[in-house]
Image (cartoon, rainbow, N blue to C red; front, side):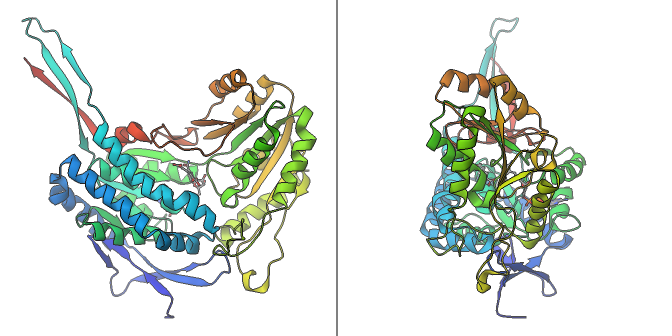
Amino acid sequence: MSQVQRIHHFINGEFTAPPAARYFDKRSPVDGRVIAHIAEAGQAEVDAAVTAARSALKGEWGKLTTDQRVDLLYGVANEITRRFDDFVAAEMADTGQPAHVMTQVFIPRGAANFKVFADVIKNVAAESFRMATPDGKGALNYAIRNPKGVIGVISPWNAPFLLMTWKVGPALACGNTVVVKPSEETPLTATLLGEVMNAVGIPKGVYNVINGFGPDSAGAYLTQHPGVDAITFTGETRTGTAIMKAAAEGMRDVSFELGGKNAGIVFADCNFDAAVDGIFRSAFLNTGQVCLGTERVYVERPIFERFVAALKAKVESVRYGRPEDHASTYGPLISQEHRDKVLSYYKKAIDEGATLVTGGGVPEMPAELAGGSWVQPTIWTGLPETAAVVREEIFGPCCHVCPFDSEDEVINLANANDYGLATTIWTENLSRAHRVAERVEVGVTWVNSWFLRDLRTPFGGSKQSGIGREGGVHSLEFYTETRNVCIKL
Ligand SMILES: NC(=O)C1=CN([C@@H]2O[C@H](COP(=O)(O)OP(=O)(O)OC[C@H]3O[C@@H](n4cnc5c(N)ncnc54)[C@H](O)[C@@H]3O)[C@@H](O)[C@H]2O)C=CC1
Ligand SMILES: O=C(O)/C=C/C=C(\O)C(=O)O
């Protein structure tokens, strides 16, 4: 085997792989080189991780006070910040996305996910009700929150550290233990977090990582494991269906953040430049691999042509390049496999009669980057709402732009989809913004902004975009078992 680094599981506080472990290759999305060999967990490693997590619940971790847990989680956040450059480098290697996306969005959010939920658990109140009784003395009811137990965390590749810690932060704040199965495409920051946990003194077995794939591999073994009390998952809707079936055995609770086919709605009275910037960011940040991203743009007819021209100009100004080169503004897709999927939609769009505004193929890259999974950012117009490219999630750097004539029409267009994750609305008329926001069937609506996140707010999808809400106290609903105590006075 070459000198490429080996990535092991993190079980009971130790990086480990059995002597006969099977390894799979992790390739750089930037140039296609193998950058790591990842151990694939079998049933035995998943058993070991779940057993470690169960023992930790009964050990030192389970006996800590909330204040002690909170201090440890602040320690995790601080240690992530201290090792910021290591996390940036690991996530850049895994995803190929430009440094500014890592330093401004993904890695700081990892630290915030621990700090914010430490604050939430410290400050949350318990509900209580005084009730009358026939003897006139009354009774007092109050709720207590207990950890749910061992939480299985299954996370995707598009924002690996942000999305994984978004689940691990509140799970640990609530006193649970976790077994994480990061995406097979992006295991590096979950692995690094194991070092952080040890450095700050999180007890062994509280945070465990097992690597591997989904079906017939680590993901399925974890979700089917009877020792897992609840499963939190972010990923494709189809995968969510498989996990829900596994969770039905033993009546385990699930929290799902799934796919989206989000609409951007641009009214003629918008701040034009801000709307172009906002839609550009929402469609093309992270090479379009953002669940909250906009793949359907509806623009009010009087500004339609001007808007399409301005968006085209912005798209054509992206700078391809290596992530560590600060001049790069645009990275590759995560893998060749994902590129094949995105390119199949690029072809479908043309087959279905789209007008290609820009992009539509593979860019010409210098020889040293030619093995990467690069695609051109792409805009289409002219498709009917029935076209596959307008209905199905592509998860790539592309959008279809369509004109509309009235508020009612655009609300119907936005809602005519099986997904219901997010919307971004652009208008200077706040009454209209409020009216539209109330009627759009999504979990998250932004007005004159996009991806502006206050972590105390409910986050999740409607329709086929998810089950449940996480964020602030909503996360506590999932990560704790709320019990009522009734005391007869
Ligand atoms: N709603 C949200 O907040 C977000 C949703 N997503 C969605 O995630 C998708 C992209 O991420 P992917 O990694 O491709 O999703 P995916 O569903 O293919 O994989 C996600 C994770 O599930 C695991 N997995 C796959 N099949 C499994 C099975 N049968 N049992 C257990 N685990 C299994 C994978 O190994 C990976 O760790 C997109 O559809 C996107 O919209 C991504 C980010 C945020
Ligand atoms: O802010 C969140 O909690 C979720 C963000 C989702 C992404 O970053 C993504 O899908 O890329």
